[in-house]
Image (cartoon, rainbow, N blue to C red; front, top):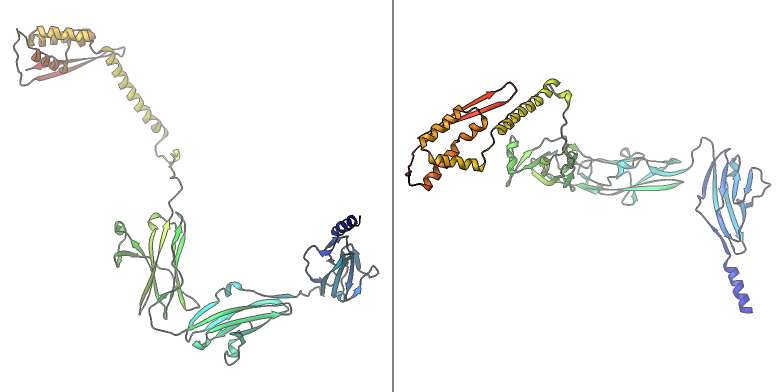
Length: 473
């Protein structure tokens, strides 16, 4: 029984827990004079804790004018300057307690709240490593704002700068200027900006380089290989370091089948290049020079190898990169016929096709009529003609054919009695090959033909055509 009671008590105790903060709060609070403010006490526990508020160690109760306690919220109306102080919310139950501290600052209506410093021009501070030649100058900027207005301290290699190291006339509130650089000026320069609300800092690394009369040097990684869509825009850039202002030129390699497209090319090694128009060369604060090559409306012929060439009186340096132009994925636009763009009137546009159709129909009708009135001879008729021709002498056959053709009045009779030139040759070859007891084989060296065509048109639209063929050996 004692064991069961212990288990029951343990289960009951395990259901309870001490108070804890349920959400994060901003411990620093500000309120304008005469406004209202709420201070939250987000705690939870089992059983629910009791809440008690204090200000600077004094308990806050309902007798305080302008102060109201609503569950876990302390509300202050018409804030006064004396309300500034430390407020504590204490939550307690039978298993523990927890405190939440607030610092309330009351400001005037036209007074700004305290704000930790921040850099106002961070884009101008991206370059943190700066190289300068001997004798040049450098300017380091650390523009910042805050409330109250922050102070700035400059350090070199983590120690404050002295007036002997940097002249007072070269230093102002937010910018450090150093002229006549020497190798001793190399190092890390730090600006430390602070006020009572916080502190920020930024560090520059300055490298002072001895001047040497040497050829230009291409710095950085540019130009780099680039890919562009068909019709898109891209650019190459080239950064050159030189003691004097260099000449920066862009070249494009010309393939063997493209030389005819350019007026002039130059030879570099085993390849030929065309010189491209060059834009302005910009001088940078770090002593280098920058130039860009812009490529707009990229086409297939723009793809290839490009070279950035930097030169001065001491020599030259170059670096290459490749441009890839992606193929055009848009389907070709088929030009649509626009009646407004045609210079021909509508009657002509409609009449020409109609005339062609009419002529074609007339020819087709004439051909069908001709085929209808002159059908090809059937096999028995052809055999009969061959047999009758085999029995007649050549001249009689010719005369009979001509006579029948000229004297016949029926189209079918004319077509059946007339023999064209191909049929005549076939008959001659048959006679020569078969021979006979009464007709000795003969060889005709040449055959002369005379063809006459007669066409008869009738009122009812019928067309009859007669063809007469004369053969002579």
